Image (cartoon, rainbow, N blue to C red; front, side, top):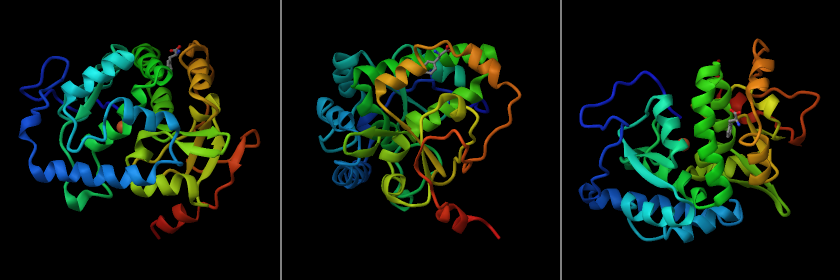
Length: 287
Ligand code: PHE
Ligand code: FE
């Protein structure tokens, strides 16, 4: 998600893109990708929504080494008309939204180092590309992401960026989805994390609640640890219908001035899949 504190680095174009410079990756960097890919590739089948595995296949992402954005974009363009472009790091909200609205996904080009294998603060290419790009090969999800960009540009003028940021967080980054054989993960922040792919589905700690846009848009989120609550959608079509195909301006107005909800709140109206113990979160609390 974008942020406004950065100045455009010299060398970045007006839309903040830079060349990926694929030829500059070292053997160690390619090996880091392969190691991460192998670990997630083994663990995700059965836990991730099937559309994600299909996307890996359509985009031939199992090819060893860090993907070349030009080759990846060519395949993605054929599938859904999306492209992947490199940026130096976080970009301002308006720039981020504008790229999405034009079916361009912005990705970091650097990869984490071995000591950051399980935790890093800024999204790297493994998170951005392995986590986000496979679902962009799915037509419904691809439309959702474009509409999100358009909705972001609009929310900017309505003072509702934070509401929309929460939607991104609890769907695109940390979303769960209900399938006939149980809950699956689809959010990029989960699928690119070994620890959270296990935690989000199996751990008794977090709440797992049915997707409720009005409720979700009031809920705070954690940026530096596993989530205390996950929201479960019924399908990508349903998500698209409730968000992209709905005028959210009246909802923004209705929510204006309503108090925020804590990351571990439970409300009488919640559709509870799992009532979390919150044991993990409490164990991490500073005395
Ligand atoms: N339809 C929303 C609006 O009226 C925008 C939106 C699109 C939100 C897609 C989320 C996802 O502004
Ligand atoms: Fe992300």
